[in-house]
Length: 270
Length: 88
Length: 271
Image 1 (cartoon, rainbow over the protein chains, first blue to last red):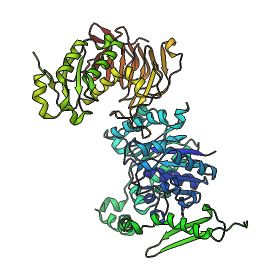
Image 2: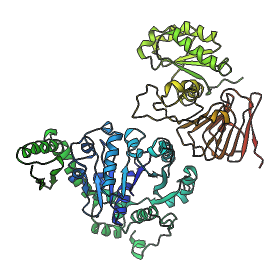
Image 3: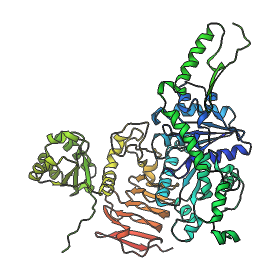
Image 4: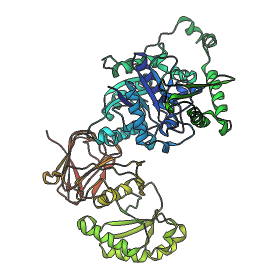
């Protein structure tokens, strides 16, 4: 039984694409056949973050318009087995998407045996974001510890539960809160919203907290999903997210202030 | 920056340079003349190929696969035609 | 005395054409549906939709029609500066564009939604009791209004007889729920930026963080009950207050709000 998961947030720049890339790579690395779809038609980014930008031939819109088959457009990841990327079109706009086209692609992926279909939503609450969430069974709502991001997440939660296909049919989309760019030091210092506050305001279950980390930028610079950096805190935190999504009950990491031990040389030269 | 960090940085791969290289290639490609851009002519090329091949053998749309792989200074165009066993 | 600039609730009439007679007829119909609600209520005319056509509009006649219907014409907004003089002559104030949009626009919605809903939204049948809408641009529809999409959920047919609406899911930012001729019970939180309205009383068994308007059709005995009072705005029968401007000590606590004369009283909710 395949699942459609939308990664969404309302606000831009909070880490939707980074999270989509990490999450889908994590699922695939554990042996689940996973497709990740970039819904940001006109401003595609997922291909860059995944490092496949030079392998894009056909895109999402080509498939919707029947100019290419889904098989031709899907890019098979060379690092992780079971991982396929469907890039967005860079030359079109969001009007190129329609419910029927998106549905037929999702159905074809399901028929092809994809277990997880991850939809990377564009920012905003317009057509692209709507198309990304419409067929979702579950949603990962990416939120930064920052007031406007929290409110936009709340807004997108309302849209999910009123306008998605499941909601229209009387059901409800399973919600997961993913807090990114979290900095325990600044929370401790009182300058950043704490994760407990965010959970209280949004009142949906927390699936993970990704610490602010320079490795996220390094990963996108080099086109590797950050989850593949097993050393980094962000990569490990994304691994935990994947574990929790698959039903494991594991404690949160990297959410408390760490007592930093400086090495002898660093003390002298640092 | 401390002396220690300075040495450490030397050892680490500089990802900003890598990002710049990737973007240069990408943007140079995106700025090239629209008519020469691969994703635009490929669908038409495929359709015309199917037309031609159909004159001689029976193939369906799905049996013809055109793909393009970009390498640093050359592109490869791969054409894959699956001929069915059935003869009509 | 004390003269200050303050925000007030106003009905905003959005002109879509320049036919004063037709506008008067439409207004009369709306007023007759809820005479109490519109009695002596101030009206601001917004000409944004008219654009350039506004110069042909007969503001003097509109003013007389409004007065005849029991409205109090206040001012006009979104008009070209060249019309200032003629408007002043006709006795209209010219409203400057300001940050008022938030409160005013919502007021317009809450007052006119009741009767507009049935013709605006094809999903909603007439006499539909409960409306849950999300004020989002719907890519599938092309609505002219600035709210864009209005999504409505069909209420069960029996709802009118039960006279109560129960909402089980959180009411999120941007959502609006209206229980016509009925009380409302919300079993979850309401978020900042949301709006719940009922013609009767409202009960919220969760944090109340958005706007809450009880007695929307003028029922002064309607009350608001909540587990944790953190609302942005509270209103009963058109009397409203920003919670920030209230001196209540009950913020974040269980509370009941009722109307006493013209004043909203916030009391602790005994459990």
